[in-house]
Length: 169
Image 1 (spheres, one colour):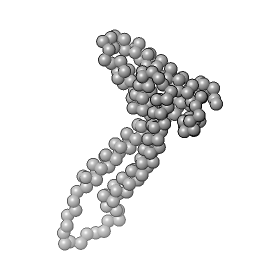
Image 2 (tube, helix red, strand yellow):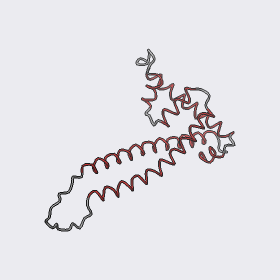
Image 3 (spheres, one colour):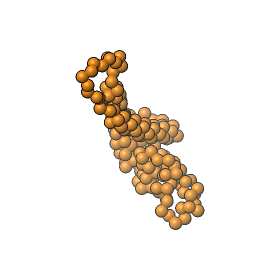
Image 4 (cartoon, one colour):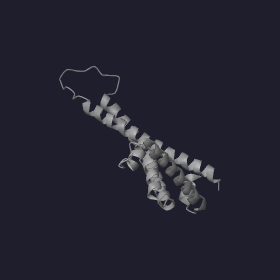
């Protein structure tokens, strides 16, 4: 088993990659929505008795359908892997973190793919002194994440769960 600092770095790297995959899925969803909108914009063909000159290019709707099929296929594989990873991370969070604030910072930052400003706002924004002490709350969120990662690494180093061990190693 690697030393704790290396395990923490590996854990953080895996969680960061999960965040990046979350962003990738959002971008792919946006691309799919734009493609669907383009498909709806394709105008109806005018039917006349006059012969047309055959076009060497396939029609636009066929291109859009092919692009959509390719996008759905590539996104599907990423989504399946992402869902499996989410289940593993959630299991690890539940088994290794006893403090709700540590679970919250990991979930908000990595599983929900939020920025640090969003993390702090979600966790501490309702407090009366939030505006005056926003920097202190940001430092507190960083410490919560650091403590959570240490606890997760400790749990992993003592774990016999093959799925979690194979995910991190």
